Image (cartoon, rainbow, N blue to C red; front, side, top):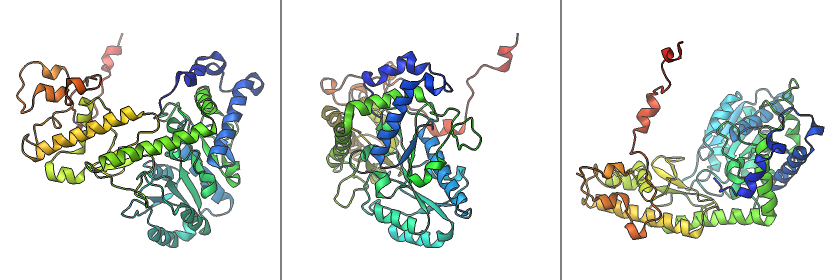
Length: 442
């Protein structure tokens, strides 16, 4: 997620934006309509597509709308049998669910040991499903955190078989100013504005997840919800229009050079972390040149085998160091996926790197037998202020628990509010916290 400047957020407090009715006549909202037209044009320029709809309320809805466009395109051409969607193992996690929602059959394409899409397996899958091929959904750069140099060839292979190419916009923040999906082979993308252009995360809405397409799919973009057969995916023509000033202000203030610089900074930050931490936590995937894209995957699986310290332990221990844990066990179980974006300065990156190296030192202590696997600062993390009161029967000190870098070298202390919980148990055993029905009786 990006850090949102106050200047970006201010306009959404203005009644001229936040009190416009979704069905207000166009002539009553000229400022908002102008802002929408600006954004549509800018997003087309950034992505290389021809048309864009701002209607979807979140990336999930944008993904759904994009796949519906592909499905309707094939139906109008008399190709109702084209219902197979190829999805690489390195693609974004929501892709298979979205494809199923629009009635497509999912076939998974393998990835190579270096994290790239396996082109040999792709060719085999295309050959097996050529007559039924509707599309391929790729994430570029992939969720494995690498740029795949064969992406143009991949698009060409799918197009030759009569399929469409869906480029998931989840990682667009690693492309802006450098490459445009609509130019290297994409037919449609949804854009996660929450990561690339500062919109709050939608979580299904209210957010903004525009869908962008090349001209041949333009007629299938979401239209007016009040018109039957308009392909609408939201109840309002422009979705969550009242928060669009955030993205408008961000793009307008950054300009083309600023957007490109943000992308390059995000890539440099990810590679800086990867190079610094690789000797301690091996980076799982890199490109042909040994570099990552906008994120890097730290592989803890061998460490876990040797020491018993899990990715959960490392994630919880980071809270004691003052950091929220990176993405855990996705896209590969037993790993941490670190994506710094361009929002973190060098001081913050160095602090995170120092914390991770210190945690590796604690893991070494466990491996050496100084602390038992079941009772050490990592397994006991996170440590609250409350847990320090009373008896202390752990083989490590209170100071080690809550000031792992030492008081003088610890960032401003952030105290976790709760100890570790059994998340898996909670997921499987839902407990309603609402009052009983008789509490509502008169």
